[in-house]
Length: 261
Image (tube, rainbow, N blue to C red):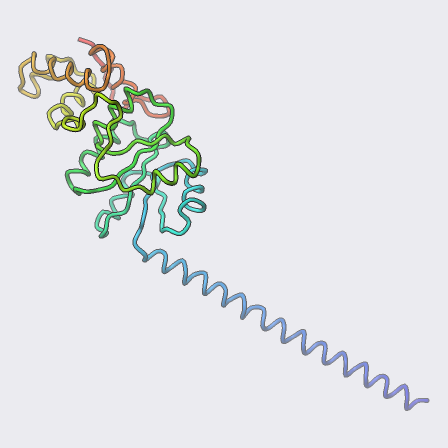
């Protein structure tokens, strides 16, 4: 009887030792598997950081950035930037990445964004820029296209349509309105300088004196731009410049108010 009890005790001890050993081996293997997965994840992230950027998105809208990076363009290397200054780091890349700027979710006024884009066109010819905005009037959209020489896309489109538009590589900027011809669809350097002075709140006489131009030349230039963007009067153009000079928080980018004289 005692011999049977002794053998049973040995069997129980043997099974317990084997179970503890196998459990110990499994515990040792878990960190190894975890470290391997962590290593592969870091390797993928490192390769992605060194991969050329396909598209750079400037926005503070987390939902838009998540939709573009994780859904629409998840197979591309898309970077999200909080400001226009962050884009300068990729201007040395060849080829240049496609740039998408959300005009409704940036901290700068639209007029300053347009001024920066015009400078980029001079510094890096051939740069591909697309602007996203919502609920803009036809006159505002026409002015933005003429100032920035790039596409303007409604940001509240259906997902599939928005994706196809962002993937397009246009050879030239399509006209926004039928009477807006290709020969004069971009504002000239002189026209833009006058508009920027008006946006700062300077009077027409002061603008003419500052730019060393006749007063009637400034008046004629404003009238020409007014007709091209589909506005009815010079006062409407100045009001449009005021709307584009205000940030999303309602602050005006310049201290001076706009002058109608």
